[in-house]
Length: 209
Image 1 (cartoon, rainbow, N blue to C red):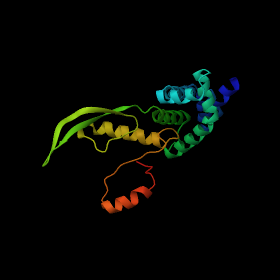
Image 2: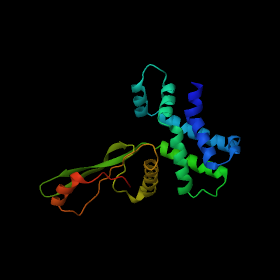
Image 3: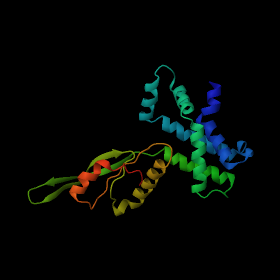
Image 4: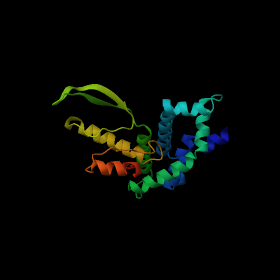
């Protein structure tokens, strides 16, 4: 069990990946970097405590304690390799090649933590009634819908900053090796109904925002 902790524990793998991407053995004793590794491990803790994740891991083996299932899942899934590659990509894409060790650790930890801790949002739905000659907006925002990864098509001027912020978080989560793995979108098309019927079934799923 100690060997599994040393190999695949989220805290250990986070510190090891930060050390590798920073390229300094001194990062092992740097308090700021160690704190960032602990912060990232806490984000993994929040991820594994989500109901859907708990259900998945407990369904594989209900006999042993949940923390052991998490550890085995990290080991079998190669969490160390996942974090190594993800941090290497983030280092270049975020323009941190010349940053200090503390700046690299802080930026990478914040980005990965946001991807792991995408919160559920609430969307308002209007009630629309159809009449023979008109469409009536019966009530505005009368229904509420919870969504985890879903983004609505439009936004109101009053909450444009909030919508933009959530869009960025969903995009970061999609570009990470964690959920959502596939992102489907709906769009308004100028194609004719005939073209839509003949092409919709053969088009690959959209995988970008």
